[in-house]
Amino acid sequence: MDRRAILKRASYSLAAAFATDALADSSSKINTPTSVELSGKTRVMEEKRSFFGTPIFNSIIVSSRDELLEAQEFIKNNIKKRTEIHLAKDFKPWMAANTDIDLAFVTLVGHADGTVIDASGIPDVEGNYFIRFYNSRTLDMGNLPNLGGVRMSGLLIQGPGRNSKVIGRLFHSPEGFLGNIMMGAVTLTEFGRGDVYQRNAYNICHFGAQIFRSGIHIDMPSGFSNYGENIAYFGGAIATSAGIGVRNSNPNGEFYLSGVSIDYVGRILEANAGSISIHGGHHEFNNKSNPLKMTPYFCGKDQSASIVIRDATIMGFSKGKLPVDAIVESVKGGGGVYFYSCRLLNLLTQQDTFKIGKGIFSAVDSRLLNGNGNFAVSLLLSQSENQLADGEFSSDQGGDWAISFDHSEKVGELAAITDAPTTKYKLLQEPKSNTLQFTKLADSGFPLSLTAMVPARRLQNYTYSFKIKGDGKCTGKIFVSAYFLSVSHFSENGNANLKRKLQHGPVREIEIGSLGSNWQRVFQSPLRLQAPEWATHYMLVVNAKAMSPGRFSLTDALITSM
Image (cartoon, rainbow, N blue to C red):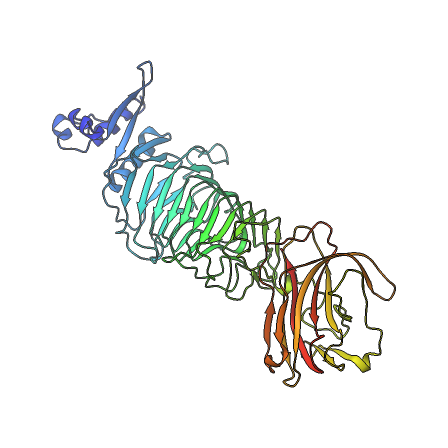
């Protein structure tokens, strides 16, 4: 038999339940209701006993928001200590604009089968929320909040819509410190913002929270005081909307998520200020019903802003290109984005880049899931991570690029040209136009190459990119290739002695006559080939042996690794 049916047969009412608890306090004087008063009332009390049969406590069970608030007032005025309020399985629709719960006194517990609350009727007005948690400070211990324990669990709440202005749970307590609390398994769905943290909210831990179909699932805005320290989520899921998974705009705010799945949202993480740290979990995006709307990981320009992700799986839903230019955007001035030991798959972007922006980005020991021999991940980073000293050709000093004989036939000495440059080639760096101009004076067949080398880092995934245009006159072909090298030493004139060489990726063949006078981009396809342990350098080669006399120009050259 249902619990409420048992209580109804026992003729307990809300008032009687409250009165029974109050009479247990000798300092309270409450009149016991008559049998007439008891008739037809909602029954909400159930006696519980220990294994030995001794009474433990009387539960307060409510089935509507009005009963919940009435129970809260009774607890604060009569019981005067922390008490659980059990929310019935068949809870009535919730339509109030605002509801405030004092965690000094009230713990919310859902039904064993889960309490489902329809809060879709909350008016869609800025400032409205399902529940605001606060601390009245009545039971504080000195200046410290006395709020420990799991304070809410077992509820599923459906709001008025992901495009609404309504907040699900608002942690905001001007009345007193709202810290050192835990929240259990709670599901929020269809709110403008799911969990929001404002004044005096800190040291709040969630276990198994699920926040779905919201505009911003977890949010910490700027502009409040004493809030944001150590907001943690363990397990659970954030999923399915065009909105943002986690957003932090508080310079002092700290979000920590461990083992949390963030799937099919418009953006995974946004750190405008403050930090977002991820340990483990699964990030998947861009299915058919929930395409990406923005760069998945964004770090703003505030110096406190940062994103750190450790040992997480990051992947696109399908193998096609994502509808964004990059996976990471890091703005100059911010603290940056850091990936450690992450697993990556299906992250090809429109611009074939993994990161954009002039801010900091670092990826260490990342590994690729099975992409059938190919990374299926765009690896190119930005000029901020360029290992060339002057990839934008902004200086007239040069230094990255040199002319050499064709070296592709064998390992040995990589020699610079010894013939007079005026008879074979011209190489000019133009900082005003940010270009490197190479002019070949020798006939087709003369072994002439333009090369650039950077130090290699073990287990890093390398790639290159540059833009090239011709003079509209020369003919023939150029060949673009890359190599991992083991250099034993450099001679006084700069020649490198090669001990070992490994080709990195296919050789790109370009008809020089097809370039015309418009810039065309050349880049390395992503490969599953990390820098070997023996490699000391990574070398990019533009082989002009098969090119006729003429000129081509380079700009925006990159060699990056992750």
